[in-house]
Amino acid sequence: MSLASGIDHYENFPVASILCPRRWRSAVVAIYRFARTADDLADEGDAAAPDRLAALATLRQALRIMWHGGQPSLALPPAWTPMLTALDDARRRHDLPLPPLEALLDAFEQDVRWSAEGRRYRDDAELLAYCARSANPIGRLLLHLAGVRGAEAERESDAICTALQLINFWQDLGQDLARGRCYLTDATLRAHGLPAQGDMRALPEAALAPLVLEGCRRARALLRQGWGLPTRLRGRFGWELRLVLQGGLRVLERIEAVGGRTLTHRPRLRGGDWPMLLARAIRHRPPAAPASGSTRPTRDAEGA
Image (cartoon, helix red, strand yellow):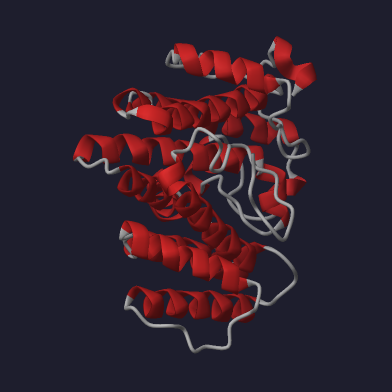
């Protein structure tokens, strides 16, 4: 269930579904719409990089004014008004922290700058540092709404969010490369005997597939690290998170089913997956790690 407005985005995972506790469902939607708006500023349309960065800076300034109890007097796009109003209401009702939202803006600004400069990620450490800004803040905000505190919960949440971000990278490989963004690191490319420069789309898809599968194994390991978090959360939030985990795992399975060939094909969830996801969420068994180095498509490949 996606509550996005404006540009039609395909979502892997439920956003504020009926399982989300009603008392903070509107806050979840507000956070989602903020992140979606900022992502669109960084990604969609044909605006030049300076214009994208200026729009993101304006959004950041509006946030800071709101978090200091003021009303933005900036000339803001009318389409932002409902999103900012809802986010301000969530801030007041739930005492939302500002740093995670600013971290998201940091990540979107990095996307714009690096794409304009043709810059790529050197190694896993650099890529994971990006995920810490682009994905992990969402989990921290949800933990805040749920009143969950503690270093262990934060570590598990970060592992889940980073895993979901990595899954999205490998699912969207072709789309991201078309935007000038390569999340295959230079170190990984060189380790597989591939050039770290040039247009990755010019390489044979079969050459990139092992790198995608390697990334999937890393994402699966991170999912396993965070797998225990839903069992320690009471009520609907725990069940919502179980479904999110199962959705991520299912997308991983679909990527693996096509042998990591996502340069020209985007695996996605389908309506028929939901009964399986619900059944798996009830059992909540941790995923088994895939066999290292396996690139052979599975029997699910035709349905991917």
